[in-house]
Length: 245
Image (tube, rainbow, N blue to C red; front, side, top):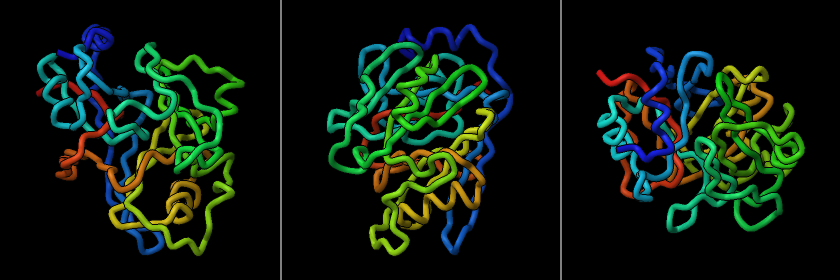
């Protein structure tokens, strides 16, 4: 069973819409793009079951949802995590805070400021730069912090280098200015931060986007035949909940 914090899911009508996923090519790099209509679809964050056991895999989460009459559609990893799979940054799941906001610089990509927070509210999703998130204190139902920001107010992260040689499989999320669309992307080939940020800003036309992670990144897109199966367990997972068939 899905842990008690998700009991409300059983009380709400499940939308019939499903996230639209497609393969796309930009500047000779191949990506998979999944777009969620926040006005018609239910996008949720997941970490652990009612016993505190981390789901870790899309298949494990899907099986838990199906036992409750639902299923997992599109899904991807949703932020960085420690060895025990606990979130590195702020993590809020249906009103329950697991980790506070981390505002200060630090090692690794997460600490490459500015970083940001993806905030889920009823009918909308927004990527906030972390200091803006703290100042505005939006009433998120769920939220996950990661970093670095890819696009901030229409500008690429100032530390991204055009001629960088650091290339990895990368995934992230951008949101429309009105919050009605959440657009997720994963590179199917290794890309730089500059290339990945440019995808969101210049190709997808988004003014705010957030990096989730690198080599461990996986994506589930059933309509494309992608299960997102992997050997390593994930921490936070974000995905669309659909009616079970």
